[in-house]
Every structure is written in structure tokens, then in C-alpha cells.
Amino acid sequence: MLAFHVNGKTVRVDVDPETPLLWVLRDTLHLTGTKYGCGMALCGACTVHLDGQPVRACSTPLSAVVGKRIETIEGVIRGSGRRVAEAVQAAWQRLDVVQCGYCQPGQIMSAVALLKSNRKPTDADIDAAMTGNLCRCGTYQRIRAAIHEAARGLA
Image 1 (cartoon, rainbow, N blue to C red):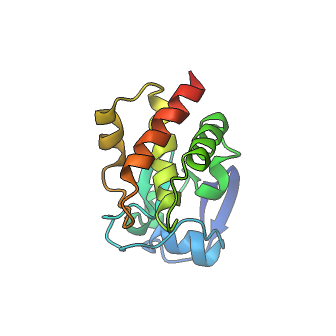
Image 2: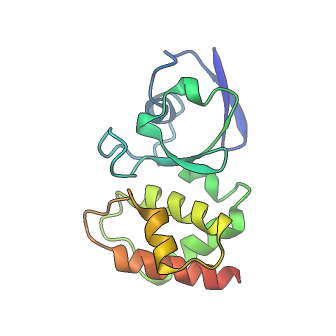
Image 3: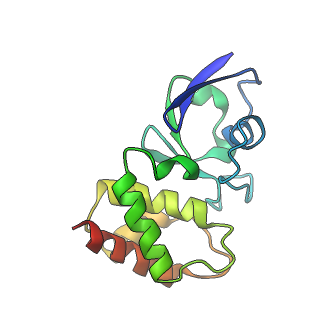
């Protein structure tokens, strides 16, 4: 049994330690907000926080998270960054960021991680933090605007 923490709760799973975290979250723990996009850590749809840092769950083996803290899109609004997550969510809604929505859990997780560490990001900061989060619908300008709006709301 491998133990780690997900969204504030200790979980124990009996799976191969090399199983990607994404599949443990989705198939074993039934946390389906984290999406499968490419399976190669290139698109960012599967972004979660590992001890507060954004990582790609599709390429993170379960063995790498034993004893650590994972926060998913389902838990971010209740976690330590609740105020930041609420500001991001509100800005996303106000600016109508979402088009198809598939990439948004990963986009939001990366945005929350950025704003937890940098409350006044520049365009360059945002671009760097969001690199690797692909949006097939091309809502990048709305995403950047929403991050700026969320930052203003946190000031």
C-alpha cells in the first residue's frame, strides 16, 4: 500500500508504484477533474499541485508522490490557496475565459500556483508560468487577462 495526501486527506492505494498519478486520481480515487490530454506532459491538462508546485500528473509516477501532498482541481478551492483559487475562478467567470473547457482545470491550477507565489505578475511572468498549458481554442489572451484581474482582486 502506498500512502500520500490528496486534497487534505491521507489516501492509501494498492497499485503499481510506476502507475502515473493521473490514472490513480481518475480511476482509483474517482477525481475526474484532472484531465488526460496528451500523456506526455506537453499539454498541461493534467496539472495538479505536488507540495504546492504545479506538476503534470500524466508523467508523475505514483512512487514520486508517496508521503507528499497532492492538490487537484477539486481540492484547490478548499485548500491553503482558497482565496487565490476563488479570485481566479471569479475572474475566469467574469471574463468568460472558457470556450470548450477541457484544458481549464490545468490552466486554473497553473494560474493558482503562479498567484500564490507572485501577486503582481507581469505578462512575461504569466507567459512563463503558463508555458506548457495548451488551449486548443486559443483563449490565451482571456486567460492572461483573467490572471491579471485575479491578481488585482488579491491586492
